Length: 289
Image (cartoon, rainbow, N blue to C red):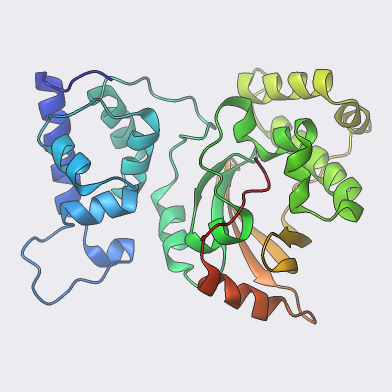
């Protein structure tokens, strides 16, 4: 990794500090505390929100240390509730290319992040219209596994569904056919909503047509339907079968969705979801890898 010693990296540190100082703890779900000496967030709080060590983040603000990865920049942009322009500026200062729209490092609208932050008692996550997970709350990680480690085409759960048999372990086998149909119909709707020359959706569809006969057969049916709400049965590695309602809130352009999961009425899922807060993410096996 490149050393951070230029004037641009010094500016990066100053920019991070200025963004940190403007945010009040309550805006990101943190307690203000009785002896707060700074008006905005502390360095350790930003580090916690971004999943970085305090020492590492402190070095970034000093314009020292190593060049941050694209994933770290995306995490900092979300932690600091940056606008799209501010996020792009952060990438430029760090000497990293601004990621294409729709990938795993896509900018999440601050409003969606605020809503996600407030959903503390139910699993929730923000995904793209191509089913790339952008951010999860702790309960979503506990329910679905950590989705942050996938890159490239595999960042899309739809892509993994049709190319990696392990991805299907999340659902009971009896539900696979229904899920396949729903994924393809949703993907067709999302692709049609994008520009006809959209490279990201086009390349993904082309790859799936080549790699998956099942996908090709379903694609030829021309079914189209956005997934707005579903009743799902999920296989949890510790708790077993959990039945949930999956609800969606779409962004204005349809490119992002806030998903949250509630217990299905008439089942024991409410008690099982409560247990997620006890189990947390300890030894949760990500069955979608």
